[in-house]
Image (cartoon, rainbow, N blue to C red; front, side):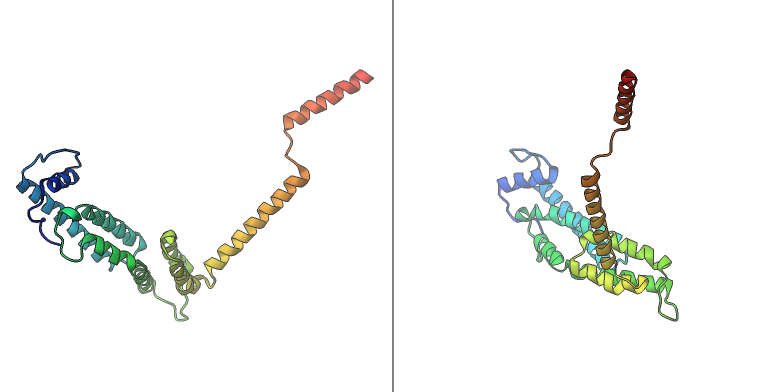
Length: 221
């Protein structure tokens, strides 16, 4: 990632100015030298952040930090991508680097999960029989599964088979399937009950009907 594009056209300078200053001017409002320095500062700041987040991405041992680093990195890469047409970057360009990260994201996530689990084993240790205490490992699994929506199906199975079963001796995927089936059965039973018995009557309506019946009986007497 390199220096400001040499000899940019006036229109390109205006477009870059509007990106850097978040304006919508029709003419160049600053000197070319000032614009050049601002572009260099803009890219330098974001490139440092991208490099810092990338370092965290490959070393962190917690899912929370991993996805925070990833989101910050993507935001800064997107901001750098907006000035690719106006700035001369060395390879890989921001758009290319973003694609490289996302193409390998599942591998990055799997490596982070394995580091997280290895750190938990180091911190809590294993008993002589190799068992893991659910009271200790449960919160670790909760932290991992909190980001389940960001894992591929393959990674979810990896978490289930490699981590979850080693703590609870069962599969959380199978448990979820059983709970979903039980919930569906309960809903079906409630629907059947509703069809057989109808809606629950309003107590006020029932009392009114009772009063009408008593008045009719008294009149008849």
